[in-house]
Length: 161
Image (cartoon, rainbow, N blue to C red; front, side, top):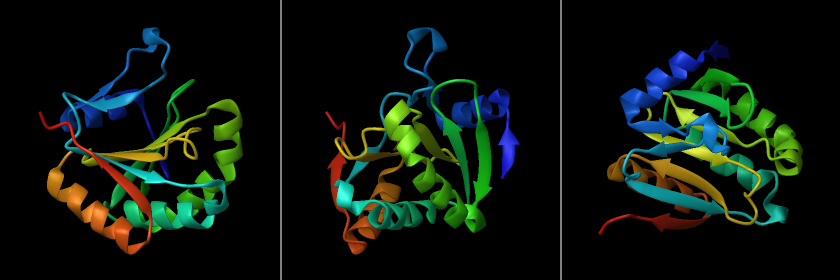
């Protein structure tokens, strides 16, 4: 994993049409697509799904892109780039860190370096699900098919008027 700077993250987000919330708002480094994402896919879990179904869902989603960035939402920026070859070790890190995420609200994002999608790995995973924000509708279709084949409980949101 290589470490990325704030300017690296800003450049990737600008190119992808992703806004980073102003730190003065008190909501951390919240990521959002300008306007709205093409689709939002929410993967639902119950506590007995931990860790196996969460691992399987993350592994499926992370195979969709060759390069990813793991970054924290709150506190001093910590952003690390990882490749598809490091997915399993990254998932193990996420599973090991979940008690801290849940207890302290140390929410994380997994951002595809292309900016085509990002995952919110946060302390609401068992209440509200794990949201995957997808910029492109065809990619959302691929993601839905993949998660369906894994047997995941999924919900799709669209902001079409």
